[in-house]
Length: 52
Image 1 (cartoon, rainbow, N blue to C red):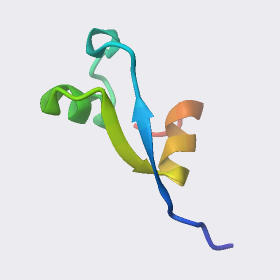
Image 2 (image 1 turned 135 degrees about the vertical axis):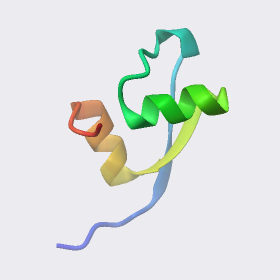
Image 3 (image 1 turned 45 degrees about the vertical axis):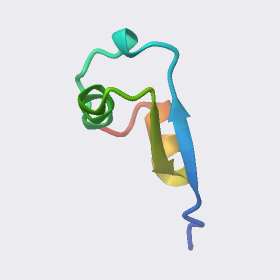
Image 4 (image 1 turned 180 degrees about the horizontal axis):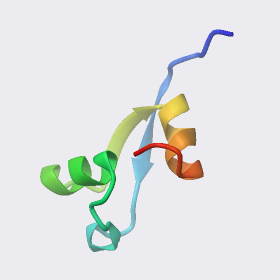
């Protein structure tokens, strides 16, 4: 099965809501950005809690 790797944005309300436990949270905190561009597969994994 092929995945269509289109990139979408993951957006948060406030950076202080992040706990900094997963890799994607650490990247957003270090860049001081509320938006992170991820592929659709990673976006689904983040929302399901399966991506560290």
